[in-house]
Image 1 (cartoon, helix red, strand yellow):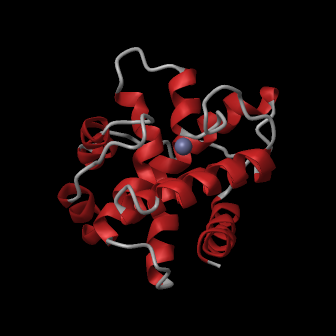
Image 2: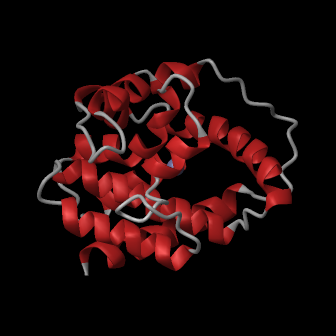
Image 3: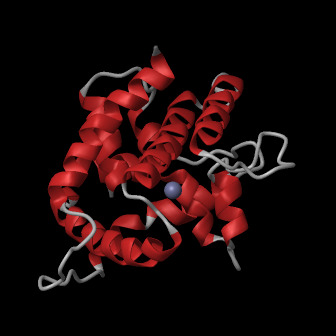
Length: 201
Ligand SMILES: [Zn+2]
């Protein structure tokens, strides 16, 4: 849901992100590998551009990962639907920023995952009535992304997202220790600035 909120804010700020429906689709697409049968961490690394662009070596630090994402954007932005690629690369840049900000060390990763799961369920309640976002995702159609993920996988994973979240039950007594809603809102606001600068300046 954080990715959808970032996408919504980028649209609100009139950043040149192409077709809005495709932009929303792209902004969720890197995580759509989860739909793949026997989807692995390696699939996730590939879809998140964590291998250098010739896919021969794993990326080791945030700067290199950011450069790889920007390189991908420059190389493919005229070959792949512009809205989808803007969303796709924005997703990756915000994942990098989240890993930096929330310190995904080995011992924090599982706890962070649990907290983000709960937070996501709550953010969905905020986004639930944003009919434009859900209609956009419904209307958009995935495209094959340079051997990272197929258009079919994107469609499969994303078109039913709203229904999937409707089945989630948030736990009102859950206690957040590592993250909170204010931090997330601040993160979204700053990250939109950052992505805007990296992609469009
Ligand atoms: Zn992701």
